[in-house]
Image 1 (cartoon, one colour):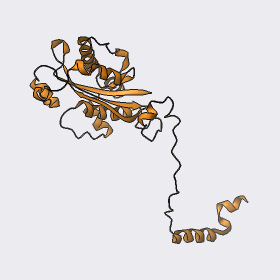
Image 2: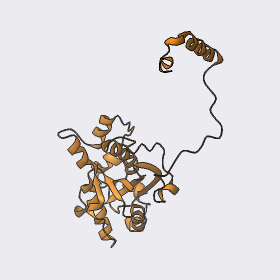
Image 3: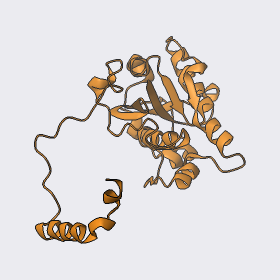
Image 4: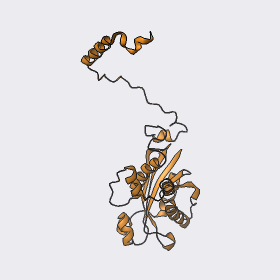
Length: 230
């Protein structure tokens, strides 16, 4: 099961008022485990950066001026997402911007049913509580260490929050990160098993401890539990 945890940064709140996407970040999960594969792109919005938006993500119009336009990265973004479920915090916001940008460059829009809203999950699980990404990080003890928002960083943080929301970081008891090669093969993760250790680990029990245990067992005599079932 492939999922894309993603986030966007924008110039404001409404694409219909001229606001644009300036950054997209995404993290790939396979069977609820990170594969290490990510997507990250800064985008030139071809407009000024409002002070309020700059205070959130710190991306200036000058910094973005030499970055590609959305039309130049749209297909690469669609190829990365594919038909996988998109895990987004407050999905309505990001989907509204993504589909507006795609529509403007005459690319197919993303189906709303393809999005999974972690904000809705959190509100159902913790009704009446604060369910912002930062609040959920505090609830789950996830360290963010950030001063500004960033699409890729927030996607990585959201991936941790999402796994906690659905039942913990190891919902399938899958204890290893799935490689990109395995992620591309159907059923590879389910059939994974740890390789045989080339040589056994050295014992941590000293000879003195072995002798002490042997003496202890001998002193138990017939009172030992295992002797009562002979």
